[in-house]
Image (cartoon, rainbow, N blue to C red):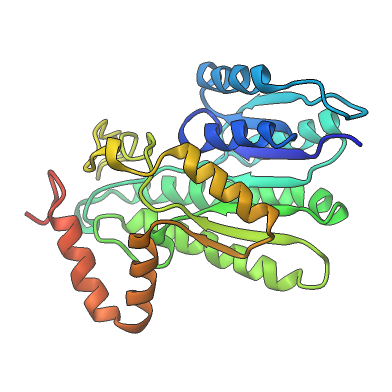
Length: 276
């Protein structure tokens, strides 16, 4: 047997890096994409060190591609180059994403466009070009979404919109392929220790370089990656992590006005909240 192939976007840090490491531990060869060549090389090095001789006819491999998922040609090249490298795709994890903080009335529209280009269109581009391989091998396509894809968050209009769009796209894709064997997973990690909040855009499109949360008390990226890979193995349709996340989805479903109030008050208590 040859190792199965997993492609992961946004693999330079955080959940993406942890997903790559966990994939290699499970015997996958990996194709990794990110914008930062230096950080991507660090992830590749971590993965390569974990590779040990196994009973495969072909050895495990680590392939990297420096690119931006908001650029269609980059996504197309990443997928095509990966197929040349590995000759197949079994799992595609659309992990690359950016966030934002700022109330809509003060936010430049270009910020929302950047969020949609990365979080939504990046998922669409990569999935489109990988789909023939995924259908051929009855593989899995995964979208790393958020509770913001179930519940619109104040001061996160662009982020919530992009995650709602991602989830709608993936749910439609799942429904279209009920008889093809394609597996579609929507994973919502909840608050996770990562760089996404520090790199979140402000209302003018600049990185904020700080986090409104105590990152040391959040779920680790490694724990999230393990849970996601377990969900892939079990062919689950949804994965909602943390009790807070599950309660948010449940309350929003049955008591939407209460959910609005709770959500507003949580965001209002954040450091430097625009609602103070």
